[in-house]
Amino acid sequence: MTEITLGPRGRRAGATRVLLPAVRRVAALLATALIVALISSLVIFALTFLSPSDPAAQKLGQNATLEQVVELRHLWGLDRPFVVQYFSWLGDAVSGDLGRSYFSDIPVAQSLGQRLAVDLSIVSVAVVLAVLFGAAAGIAAAVWRGSVVDRLVTAVSSLALTVPVFLVGVMLVVLFAVTWRWLPASGYVPIAKDPLDWLRHVIMPGFTLSLLPGAVVARQLRTSLVSSLGENYVVGARLRGLSPAHILFGHTLRNAAGPALATLGLELPDLLGGAVVVETVFGLPGIGRYALQGATSHDVPVIQGVLLVTVAFVLISNITVDTLLSRLRPATREEHR
Image 1 (cartoon, rainbow, N blue to C red):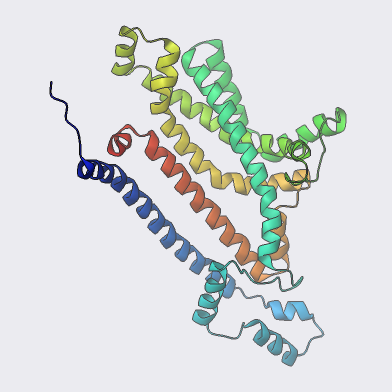
Image 2: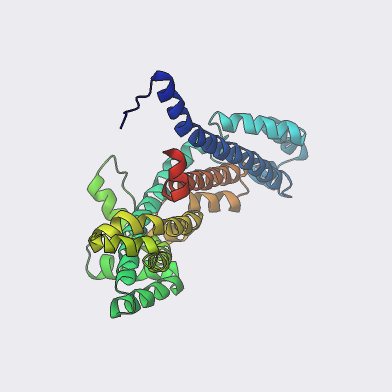
């Protein structure tokens, strides 16, 4: 047989065929994310612009005169047309300037940066625990389907889907913080200051937040694995003498993980929303409390900043999940080869 050697031009053509689909997909994702971000920013600004409350009058109080209110509105730029205000705010937001709180005069970006670290810590721990425990439970239920293990995983998953998050948090505080005194009941320590103490403060909130996505991952992965284990390629792999572990982790799991990963991606925005409840239970200084303070005082820059950061989190999560899914889909992997 004659060996065919590709020259530099052939290698470049092959590399182009491999990279071009990936570049196109990334470009399409970024373009879609940009359009969604622009529309979301317009909706966010329009909602706050149309709000009947007057932050200038609220800041100055009932004893303020009309002239004082008008002067403060002019100082904040609230008397300018909608289009002018929107593009000025959008330009500042793109550069990282989300304005200053009307009442504390602290930059919103600075406050969000400090508080977002708390929520990202909780969400990160929740995702890791959900993937670890959810995947382990789903695999065990699929491998021993119809057994006691399968029924136990189904029962625990159903229970996790029905128990309220705040109730789980309160129970954990009572057990691990009040009764056994193993973990702190509230507060937060930055990971850069003390990683171990950071973990002690976020493990209970993270575990509380991980129950729902973990149960969803377990149920979805169990269903996908049971279906995949009955495919023809699994039967063929068994006939070729491949071990059950190699078939499961080398072939079946990768094909079955797609639906579970997609389901987890749908749960990520809910995790950030659930972090607001967890913040209250565990006394954490996250963006949920910050948003509540801003909404209560009608602090428009705070409300706009929180909503904008939330939209950015959702978009980044969706892009990440979609990219991972593209690597798991067999058809997409063939395109990249």
